[in-house]
Structure formats: C-alpha cells, structure tokens
Length: 326
Ligand code: SAM
Ligand code: SF4
Image (spheres, rainbow, N blue to C red):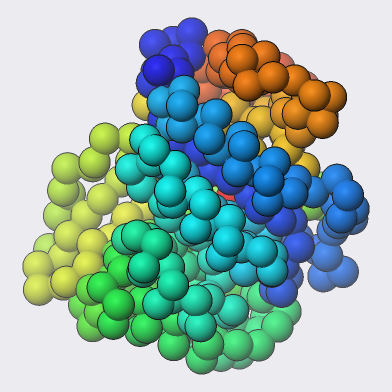
C-alpha cells in the first residue's frame, strides 16, 4: 500500500500518454502549441505498461488516461487493453476532448471503461472555436451521446473563464437536466504554458452564487471520498452539478493522486515544478524492486498541499496542463 508522510493512501494514478493535442484551448496552451516532447522522450507503450503494473502492485487501483489528447496516440487502444488486464486495477477511466473518441467507444466498453470525462467549455459553436482555436463541437456532442448509448458514465468538465464563457454556465447546467451527465465547473488554473496571469474572478463561491441565482433550489449533496468537486443536485435534474476549486486548492487535504507525465516524470503534486524521472531510471535498467523503492520514496516526499508545493518550487508553475497531465 502506498502512503505518503501525511498518512494519505495513494491509490490513483493519472497517466498522461502524450502532450500533443488537436485543440489549442486558450487556458491550456498558446496558439502555436507547445515545444512538444521529442518522440524518443515520450514513454513507449511498454514503458507505460511496466510502470502501471508496478503502481498497481503497490496499491494503485484507479488509472485515468489523460494528456494532451490521449486519442492522438495511435497505440492508445492496445495500451488501454493491457492496462485493463492488470490485476488489482479496479477502475480505468479517460479524460478526452471528445473529437477523435467516438469510433473507439465500443472497444472502450468491452475493456471495462465505465466512466469518461469530456472537456466542453461551451455549447456555442462560435465560442467553441474561440476557446479551442479549432472546430468540431458537433463531434464532441456526438461522442457524449454515443458514450451514453453505451451506458458509459459521462462527466463534463468546463473551465470557467472571465469574459470568455461565463454565458455558457447556465446552458451547461441545463444539460444535466436534458441528459444523464454530471457537469463540473473548474476554476481556471495558471497552467497554460505562458506567463500570463489568470483571473480568479470566477472562483468557487462566485460560480455557485451565479448558478443559485437561477436555480434557487440547488442543494448540496455529500461528496464522494477523494472528490475534487463540491457536489450539488437540482430537483428534477438527472445529472449532478460539481464545482472544482482547483485554483483555491480546497481539496489537497484528501489528495490520493499521482501524475505520470508523457515524458515519464512522476509528479506527486500538480503545483510542484519538478518530479522524479522514472523513465530515466527505467531506461537505466533498474529492476522492478529498485523502481518500486524509487516510487515509494517519491511518494513519501509528496507535499502536504499545493501551497507547500508552490513554496518548494519557488513560485507558480506555468507549465501547460497538457505536459503535466490534467
Ligand atoms: N485533452 C484532454 C481534455 O481536454 O479533456 C485531456 C487533457 S486536458 C489537459 C485535462 C483537463 O485539464 C481538461 O478537463 C481541461 O479542461 C483541464 N485544464 C487544462 N488547462 C487548465 C487550466 N488552465 N485550468 C483548469 N483546468 C485546465
Ligand atoms: Fe488539448 Fe485538453 Fe489542453 Fe484543450 S485542455 S488544449 S483539449 S490538452
């Protein structure tokens, strides 16, 4: 069992399989993209699978595949298939922008994927193009419908940005009435690959107040263990509403997460500037036992919270979420 020095049980790995993306969301990366990780520096499927096996042997029972856009990786399905077979794995999930996802849904269902997070910040075609700097809203919506048709749970993640998509909050809330989807609003974080500051005007209380003004009977429901969102229901709605105070970091106390970047760096906290290079250790020929010891020690050094991590890293990390693994 992996436990950090604050007694938190660490059982959740977010595996970013690639940094590249077919969108250019303004809150995630610059218009021209990022300085992409060179092909040889990305972990191979074999390397990712070996590390996933070690993590599951050490008590990780939930793996989320993320990126960048996971479906930009051509070998994604074989990787998913192999991860899904790891003994000890209880839950395999993905976070995707939904553009390339739809054709793979039947296979994902066969592999036991029960839940998928879709990033969708607007239901308006024009604002979709403004935010993502690309087109394809209809494809994202088709993916959501096909996932639901295959009885795969859908959570929609919307990053709330002052002056960009606050008019989308209510239409997205209403989506949880029309469809059995949970809709979560995320505070914008400074992880956009630039030094540009982000506005925290739309923080958790502001988002909640805005929703409550229009849906006064919204009520708090219990948050599942390790939940990053504060959860609510609106009577008559099929899906729930969540708000993720990602920037104000109210969920650090119960953090059970690790991140493995596409370059194989183990990050024990989103707000930490560096991490342990597991790929380098693996390529140096370490045995399973040695790698487990390295992981064990890294987890012991997991910071108490994002504030402590930031202090240790002497300032805010501005790296894109696509290279950290959002
Ligand atoms: N490309 C996939 C997608 O968009 O779903 C997976 C990777 S993306 C980096 C994962 C999540 O990070 C998305 O839900 C996205 O909204 C979120 N994200 C990216 N940059 C963010 C930021 N600056 N603040 C808050 N959330 C962010
Ligand atoms: Fe791509 Fe996801 Fe980042 Fe948008 S949030 S640019 S879809 S990695």
